[in-house]
Every structure is written in structure tokens, then in C-alpha cells.
Image (cartoon, rainbow, N blue to C red; front, side, top):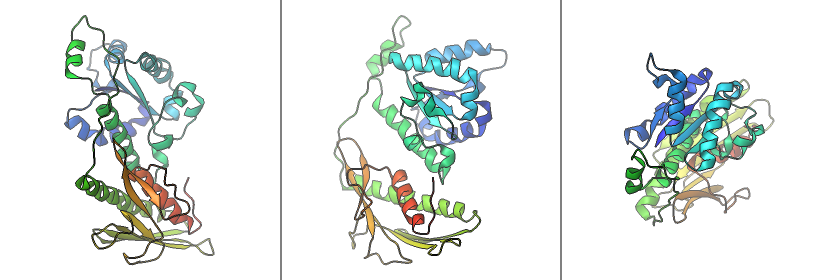
Length: 313
């Protein structure tokens, strides 16, 4: 898919970071990105942008206060992208970079934004996790909307009309190897999220944090809130092993807890199309809520720091 990236030049750092996270997709030949810096010297800017607005399959809008303030981004690029989205000839994906009044814009409010729930990348404890969530959603789009080879060949004919993008999802069965790979990757996501979030906590006045990588299947963390009477919280997180089966990923709110105890956990489930996590053994958990590993890590982090009188919005 050819992706047109619409952004404010004030958000160049976010654009660069997005390109880093898209590298796997571009290396695989699944996506080709275009933005205004691709225009060669001597070319007519408006003409080149107009051509790409008509040629692209996918529009990535890097939404921020500066994006919304840009008449060119909103009135020209976004408007044409939304027209093609409505016509079924392209897809528009809002990527919320910074907190802004984007939900007041009816056209954007009607679309599913990324990262999860439209939470701005700048608001995540670990921005890399947010970008990973964006890339995973884009990969799903690419896989779901792949145009059959025959149709693509017809679309390449000069006189052909580009077909509407079909939405395909192939059913499959997940075996124990698939489940094990998903579990290991999910646990790695939890560990990375907590490690980076602890570093962030440690930079805030009145708060302290400690992360301990105990083994390949366990880690622990402690946070201290000096302004709260019961301001210390511990957590031990374990990945399922062959000896213990308290959950695929499970945790105890105590320091250096053994792998045979748990206050809650997450189990792997799947439908006919994908694997996901559900929270178990916890009064706050909802068995019907499907969680990505990134979202599950965030849910657990918020519950953990809440025990120390800390909240994260």
C-alpha cells in the first residue's frame, strides 16, 4: 500500500519516529510512504502533492495542535483524503501525536484513531509502545485489505478505474506454538513497559521507582510515593512455565513473590482471526474485554501504581 503522510512540519520528530517503527513494513515491501520531503528540487509542490493525494491507498494523519492549526493540512490534504475515504478508494487513519481538540472535528471523530482509544502518543508512559500499537494496526489494515493479484493487475491498466478496497480476513486455527509465541511476546511487552515506566516515575519529584529483571520469566517493580501514607507498592510478574499454571501472565502485589501465588493474571484467548489477552482472577477484570499486550500492560501498570496512591491519565 502507498501511504500519504499528512503532518505539520512542527511535528517532524514524530514523523521521523514513525518512519523508524514502519521500517519492518517497508523492508517487507508491504507499505511505501510518501510525504512532502520526497518532492525533488525544481518540482511544483502543489502539483506533486495533488498527484499523491490521488495515487495513495492509505492516508496517515499525524494529528496534533499544529496539524489542526494548519489550513493546508486540514483544508487540502485531510479534506481530499476524507473524500476518497468516503468513496471507498482509500483509507484514512488518524494518528494522535499530541493532545488536541481533534474530537471536536466531526470528520475525525467518526474514524477509529490510533493508538488505542485515540490516546495521544505523548500521553503514553513509553512512546515506543504507542508507536508499536500504531504499526500493529497498520499491519492489520494491510493484511485485511490486500487486493488480489488479478485485481491489482487490472488497476494498473491506464484506462481502469481503481476498485474499492476489499476487506478480507482469513480464518485460522491457533496451535500451541502460536500460543507460546504470543505469550512470550506479550510478556516481553509487559517487561519493557514496566522498565520504561519506572524510569519515568523516577524522574518525578516525590516519586521513586525500582525495576528488577529477575529471570527470563519474571520481573518485579516497586514504587514509592512519599506524599502518601501508604505510598509503597510492589508487584511481581510471572510468565507461565511448565511447572506452574496460574495464568499465561500472572502477578502478585508483593515483593519477590514466588511463582506459585497470584492476585490476578491474563490468559490468552483467540477468535477465528487473532489472539488476544483477557484479564482473570481480579474483581476489576472483565472476561469479555479483549486486550492487546500493550493495553494489558497499561491496565496492570495503572492498577499497580494505584496501590501507592498514584494515577496516570
